[in-house]
Image (cartoon, rainbow, N blue to C red; front, side, top):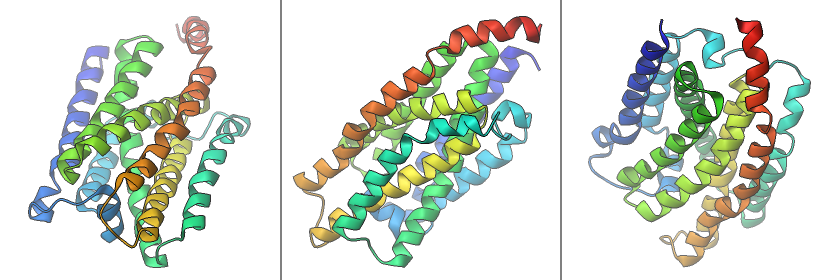
Amino acid sequence: MTASTRLALALAVFVAWMLITAFSGALFSGGEQASLDQMMSRGVVPQILIACAFATAASFLFPCRDVGLVAPVSGRSLLLTLPVAVYLAFFFGLALYLGLPSPKIVGIVALNAVLVGISEELACRGILFQGFRARFRIWPAIWLTSLIFAAMHVLNGFVTGQFGIAAVQSLAAFCTGMLFMAIRVRTGSLYPCMVLHALWNTGALLAVLAAVKQSGGQQPTMELSMVMLVPVLGVLPNLVYGLWLLRHAAREEALAEPMAA
């Protein structure tokens, strides 16, 4: 498969996946719009399940190592994920402090978060990233993947009707996406990204649901909107850490090229 063909196939898969993620929910919701936290806590979200199944099936079009469905290069490389535990502890701690929802809702949120983690990592830092890598140098591939990952979160506005919050999510997604991208490159595996992505979404959503519960289940207010901004404030160091992890990416790519040849 040529580099151009590999990129074209990756883009076609990604666009199909994105359309499923953004618009297939209309077939099941009857046109009803709900906030992201409401949607993710009511039950398994059909479009997320369908998109995850599609991304999983599409990943078989490419070699496992190409997509990142392999073990990390070493156990030591997993130590790079430890700083992320600080942010995960913050989100889960905030949710515990404000008051978790029922165990059933926690389970539903966690299940949806796992599906999102698998789906988005396969589609973005698996299929799409390696499509760009087949055609471009590593840094253009990183920037393109991260910007597209961030931009696609604006599509949440079509599902929830809350484009302002979707824009906030897009900014947070760029910062966190750069960190996941760095972990993907440094560990050589997509599995750590999937786990961290699922835990991140679970913690953030539980924190929002806890805030809603604290406010008596009322519709989002300015205070709740500020809670939605917490991820943005918290993920700015993620961007810095991700860029630091990737500081030698171009040099390592140049050193690997003679061996590949």
